[in-house]
Image (cartoon, rainbow, N blue to C red; front, top):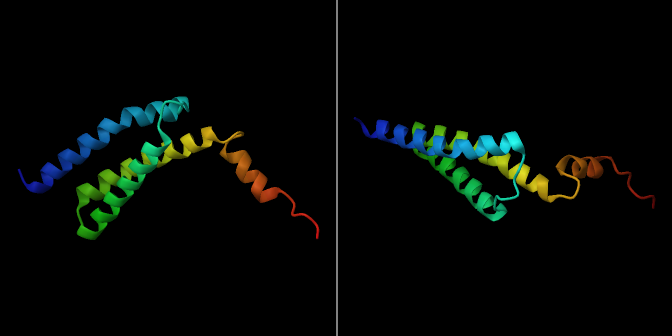
Length: 103
C-alpha cells in the first residue's frame, strides 16, 4: 500500500463522515443547531487545506477538500441566510434594486 493510497483512504473517510450532516441540512434547511463561528472556521480551514493541496500537488488533499468545501460552503450560506430577517435572496434583491435617493 503506497502513501497515496493511505491519503486517499483518509480523504474518503473524512469527507464521507461529514456527508450525513451536509445532506441533512441541505434537505431540511434547518441550521439552528449549527454554530456559525464553527462553520466559518471549518470552511476557512478546508479552503486552506485545498490551497495547500494545490501547492503540493496532492490529489487526495485536493479532491477531498474540494468536495468538503462545496458542502461546507453551502451549509455556511444556508446558516447565514437563516440569520438574516428575510433571508439572503431578499437582502440581495433589496440592495440591487432599491432606487438611489435623489440629490
